[in-house]
Amino acid sequence: MSLRIVGCGWLSLFNRCICRMPYSTTVRRIIISLIAMMSLLSSLANADTFNPALYEQIMMLPAKIGNEIIQLETTVYKPEGKGPFPLLIMNHGKALGNPHLQGRDRAVVISSEFIKRGYAVVIPMRKGFSKSSGNYVETACDMKRNGQLQADDLQAALSYLITQDWVDKNRIVVAGQSYGGLATIALGARAFPGVKGLINFAGGLRIHGGSCPWQSSLVNAFAEFGKHSAIPSLWFYGANDSHFTPELATKMHQAYVEAGGNAKLVAFGPFKKDAHTMSGSWDGIHIWWPETEQFLQHIGMPTDSITASTENVTLHQPDSDATIAEIATTKDTDATGN
Image (cartoon, rainbow, N blue to C red; front, side):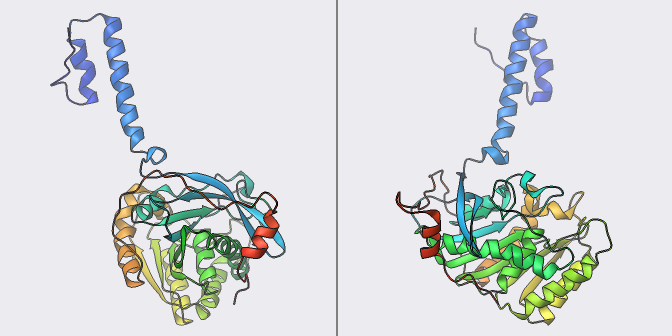
């Protein structure tokens, strides 16, 4: 006899429906377990780790930072085809504690929106973070210097990436969240060739404890970066951000613009329990994507959706007789900034 569950409705009704059927207790338990498993698999299919539109590759990107070759643990996504693709390089924040214990950032929400529009997305863990080599360096209350140190890593990563034939070196967008946002704006002051726009999701660095006047240092840092940047930027800060108040966000933006920077501030309202997490939530897309779409169109970057695939990502690897240092030395562009 075939089993028909028509009319039982959603999972909340399954138990009641099954219990009314003329089956033994064991059979009913098996049926209920199978239905629960199907429901779980369905929900997992919508979770970020099961997004079929993305193919994820992890590689150690050789980045020449000063006189060192640092291996940056990097997540790469790209759409179907050989490219070259417009590039989004997304930059992570900083969790409390040892940076080497911080997990690899996947930026699945932001990546999914860009990759389905034809972008390759690259997310490097900066020096000393996660499995990247080297040690993280922080210069206490000097926020300008902190931003510049992180921008060194981004510039080195970009210098390597533009040597890849699947990257369109003339169509690059740089984005970052929290500390990654500060690094993004710092990089913008260097006028890296091909970078068309910057996106700052709640950018900054908060110092916990002590007597550091980190808020005023942030304002001064953004003013300094604004003096040297002509790249258009888009900024997102929410009303209930646990790190940066609306007043501080306004001051940072005002300092940047008055110094000569080109930035639009999107001051959105409260978001869930903490607006600082907005860019990492699927529920935040309706806040940032419409503004981002207009921004990308304004700077001449693509916004039309395409069909994404799970094609593998192939990065150029050093020849068998070549060292990482030789590859980086011959292919890196000038790493100096303003």
